[in-house]
Length: 214
Image 1 (cartoon, rainbow, N blue to C red):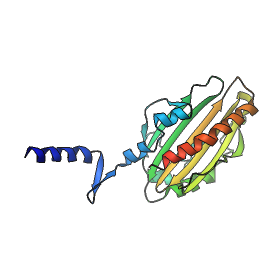
Image 2 (tube, rainbow, N blue to C red):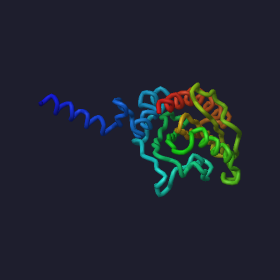
Image 3 (cartoon, rainbow, N blue to C red):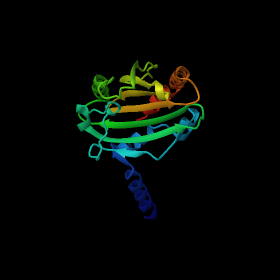
Image 4 (cartoon, helix red, strand yellow):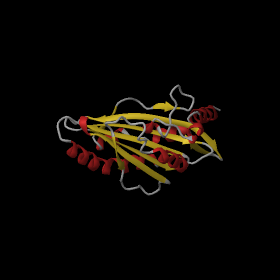
């Protein structure tokens, strides 16, 4: 009797975190989303540390998330968002400051690839960016096998020695939006651009590989 009660209690505990389908545990949206974020160890290998705990993203929020956020626009898929998480990080390098923001979301009645396709249509958004910010072109990085879609672009503000690149990726009904910003007052802009490009060659595959865990 005591054993039956114990087993029942364990099942209640587990199913509170996951769904049981056909006798097996299926992760919830929250578990899949959190599991697709870079871990503390993965961030550390990129020289980053997490600023805050992940926060939920919903379409009912006062400032709802849009995959087209870098362009301050909205897209049709925004209304199909089911759940998401957002996290930020930074590095501690005194010569080159890098900030990192990542949002992973799940959608219904569409695919992550369609979300990326819609976001791609507004990339460049020259009517939004300030006059001293230049859209410098697409973000060209290797695509991790398993992704359904990938897109990205970079913009720069040479006066203040800043460069920001936005990455969009998809698999299944999940979409990823990651933004990487580098700034410095200690090296010239061409050096900053080259240093960020070199760092992204390592960071983007790590971010996308983690995303595929969703």
